[in-house]
Length: 334
Image (cartoon, rainbow, N blue to C red; front, side, top):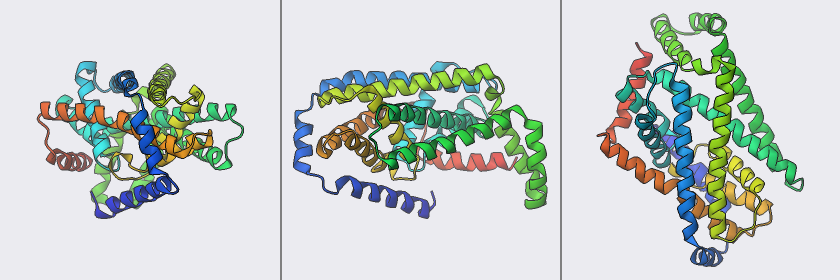
C-alpha cells in the first residue's frame, strides 16, 4: 500500500468523523446505546449472512463461463474477501478474493477481477435504484441528496453500458484499444498488456447473454433487499419508526459514499452518511448516531470474525496480501 493512499484514506475518514461529531451530544448517544434492545441483532446478523450467501451464488453465476465452482468452496472465499475489505483500506479484500480463487481454483486473477468489477457495477446501480425509489416517497429531501443520487446513477449506468459493450463486441473493442496500445505503450509491454486485457475480457462472458444480465440484476436486488432487512431489524433495537423506503435510501446512500477512499472498515464515511440520511427523515442526531454505530458494528464484526476463521483454515497469512499484488503483476507480464 502506497503511503499517499493510506494518508488519503485517513484524511477522508477524519473529515467524515468531524462531520459526525460536530454538534453531537455524546451523553445522549450513550443513553440510546444503553437502552437499546440488542436481541434484535440476532435476526439482523442471520439475514445479513443470507445476503452473503446470495452474493456467493451471484459470483458463482458470473464465474460459470470460466469454471464451475461449488457454492461450498466459494462461500469461504467471499467471506475472506469481505473481511479484507473491512480491515484494509481501498477494498483490498477484492484483490485478496481474486488471489484465493487463483490459489484454490486456478482461475486467472485478471478474469476474476472482471467479475468482481461487474458485481460492483450492479451493486451501485441497485443501490441507486433503491435511493431513487425512496426519493419518490420523500419530496422534502434536500437538493444535495438528490444530486448525489443523480450523479451516482449516471456514473454507474455509464460503466454498465461500457462493460456490456466490451462483453458483447470483444472484436470491436479490440479494434479500438489495439491502436491505442500500439501508439502509447512501449513495444516490450504491448503483448503483456494485451494478454491482461484479454483475460479481463473473458471475465465478462456472463454479460453476453441478456438472460444472464437479468438474472444477475435480480440477484443483486435480492442481495440489497436482504441487507435492507438487516437495517430494519437493527432499527427495532432502537424503537425507531422508519419506513422500509427510508431504509432503502439509507442503504443506497451509505454504500455509495463508502466507495470513497477511507480508513479500514469505512470509518467515518459509513457513519456520517447514515446519520445524514436519518436526520433528513427527522431522526435526531444522537439517536441516529447510536443506531448507525450499532448497524455499522453489526455489518462489520460477524463477517470479519468468520473471515478470520476461514483465513486460518485456508492457511493464509498476512504476507499473502503482498503475494496477491505480486501475482497480479506477474499475470500482467505473462
